[in-house]
Length: 600
Image (cartoon, rainbow, N blue to C red):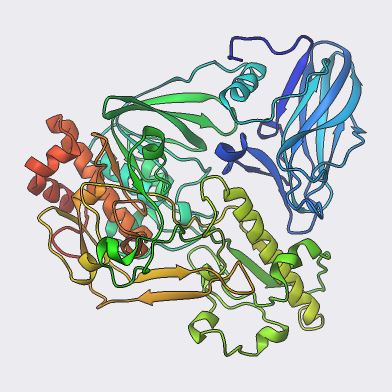
């Protein structure tokens, strides 16, 4: 089927949950759109049912409509995320999120509708992360498509009245993919150099792992530009968006998921992005592109070479590398916070969560507020007594000890990883209250993130691969464009009992001196106009465990922004800038406040 082909005969109404008039207490979750097909509404009530979401629709033709609801039973044996749907006040005879299936359309029977306006209501029944993608009303008997393939996309576009192809979003000197600290730094630096910049971010806020959705503080080398954009207001929000909006040549596109790229030979010419709320697809054309997503999405879509996993010791002769290659990666982390109320607070039984948490009852590793993490939390039962089999360094309340997904595909299993961590947090909280009911009678969950702090994905293969030995031995490079600092931060999964906890962790501070990052690590060796900054630059897994820090990524970003300016000025590729204009590049980076000649 193409977007020009009609859907089945009859009358059809597709109601995307993200287009509801009033979300009520539900929240828009668009982070898994690529893997499951669409943004959806999430009832993230921490065990307390959230307020109803409501919307109105136009019924152009009276009739008997079959109703389909696309939802997910996220713990199939227990159905914790149940919800109801009502149309014109009539509740449909199905509890959704309870059919034992992953994302799928569920038949809710028929309902008679008169011509005119109709109301639809989503009612959360549990407070435990029920999720609704869309509601489809049809006079036909045809089941709606459930895939994420082009035909299904075309079907949705047609029913929503959207164009068959992306609309023109304009042409830019520089397109920056990803609006974390790294991406905002690249866009801000490029804007200050006068470049026309499009910053495309798939979240409603900027900052990535530093944003209010997650809350980490940038570590590593920071400097004035990074400090300015990551300054927080009283509510924890970053200054990044205000700074970018003050730049007349920078355009910011929030909640836009990049899903395709177009190439002309070895050059990227455009990227296509989908607006999470409207579904509208836009094409952004650019001269140069910088990937700051952390997921290497532009390279994967364009076919650039990437690296993944833990390289073996023999590959780069790195002392910290494992003897044999390991197809694993740093997992994702879910942040949370508890608080004491001035009255007793109940929490529902959560056997489906305790299945994951088991008897774990240590709520250490909390986020006190954005920018303040690694905070102790309530502890109960056996966790009060030190287990001698656990290294004492693992008893510290470090947030990243709550980590999962190391051996799963971070691109296709991200929702499962997040959900497993939700179960771990809910189950541990339940254990603490159950084991010490009098001590923690007033304990409540104050906040649990539904967006995880992202771990490791694929890394680009650049013109040079930075290694542990380069960092440890302070290798000098003629094309140094950034200094980075920090420790090798290595996570070892596989706790024998709690799979959401690390087995061990290494924080190797080396000699605590900054090290050099060459420009050749910041551009793809296989595409002529693609650069990268952040955790997925051209490094080994070991080297990446320190270059990944957000402040360090910001230094990469400043360097790539400077390079984009020179690429435009000289009509050159990044490789040609390396060959002919390194000194000018370094001077430009320095003018922007980047760390070139010395660490900041």
